[in-house]
Length: 314
Image (cartoon, rainbow, N blue to C red; front, side):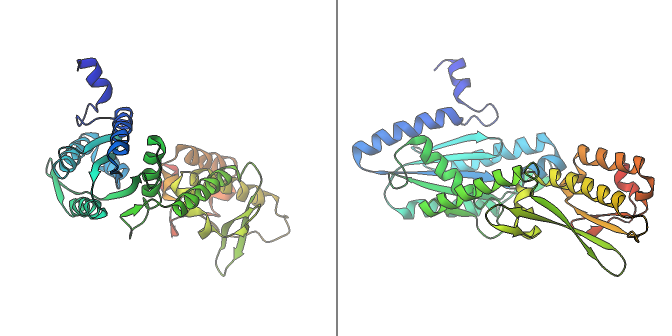
């Protein structure tokens, strides 16, 4: 194999094959499996908390960890199996000639044990955590791309779970994944479709704000029914900016004779503090409406920030 051909099919960091080549390998394995009537298993693996690792330790540490993970996966598979790196923190293992589901479970158990291993990288002790999705040929599909997608869907359904670490694909899981994708799309469109609303609750010492979603078919949804999803897909930043703008508009439109709240609290996600658009929107509001600065109270994940300047000076 020429150097250019090798580079096109392999990951430069780990030396493992990459996404396009793993699809070719899977198609070849499926042709062999059809001939010999055996099963193939696809494991889609994600390294958990990778973004946080990058943010706190930098790319050099993360890259060394990925190299260590790649080598561990190779060491725990057979010579005929294929290990690939398909995304920054995502790997795929193809198991050829699987005799029984016990073989699959044994490998999953090995991978789960790797999660208990602390890796030493440049004097940093890092514990790896994995989420694994599993699909099986020919049980789950006979198309390579769809089979790979099924394993990804199974993994994606548990990527934010603290209790589940692996999941086998099922048709019911596919329906659930479809509904989740549909809900994600509807949530992203909710602001444009004027489906969100701000609700005010007057307490003894403050006025607290909440968000509701007037879903077109599911009815009125409370925050705990959709804010978790909004964080997963990164839409929480858009919601926080929208809520901030609505609160300001309402505050300015309240009747002058009506007693305005002396403390108006908005609860935001910590992700919004990393979003310059939110910080800029907040600064712009405070500059235009100085009176609001003494009234507005920002709570991050329900923890009140005592001094608004700590945010404005970000």
